Length: 279
Ligand code: 7PJ
Image 1 (cartoon, helix red, strand yellow):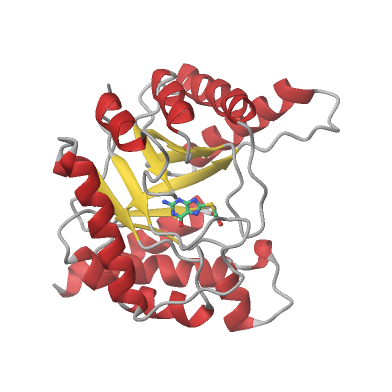
Image 2 (spheres, rainbow, N blue to C red; image 1 turned 30 degrees about the horizontal axis):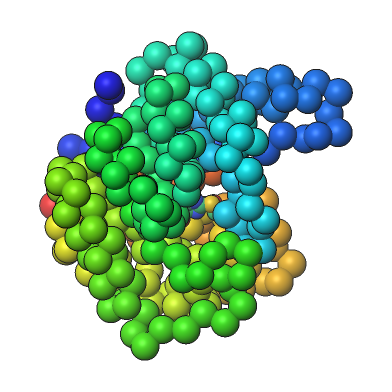
């Protein structure tokens, strides 16, 4: 089993995780094979662009998205993981899934981190993580993807999210899971208003101070549109995505999960060079 990088680079830069969504186009003549091929090619391009690792997901967790069946999700992700590893054998690949069975099959296909936006709340998920022995990312989400943006509410968003992550880590540790393999994520955009997202982003150092590596995922998310202009769609959010990736790096986050790998890596390298020159 290959080690997945869950600590920042030695110059302080976070690891850059490139996003690979496997969403088959049922109208494509090529069907399953075409979507596998497209996702594989995209993953290889992200590695070429400088990604340190890849996050492969077969179920959309965007606000309002419908759930996908277990077999459908598995049929999407496993061939992509295998195809990427066939070309680039040592690539650290995470599997973005809420389902223990999908995580297990993905790890058997070569994935080496379980990224769970549901923080192992599914039945048997903590036991499965223990069995697999790979690092896990526990993300905070209020509610479930289909309805989470309806009316998010917190007493104190930073404390509530930190307490939740501490509780989920505690459940995992109680199974005997290795503390050194746990990554935390405040879950930007998952059951949060703009104000909640901003408060969490302003408090990333607090999450880092909890002592476990922090993964930050805000690439192309809607809060950028809410701040900038209602007309900016997902493809027009590069500036905002880079701004918050740089902010997360300065706060000490270990991993940033992004779509625009080349641009983000360049920005992070330049920021690290300047900060290290001044240090
Ligand atoms: C995240 C994720 C995130 C982690 C997605 C999107 C939605 N996993 N999976 N953190 N977001 N750990 O990319 O817009 O923020 S899917």
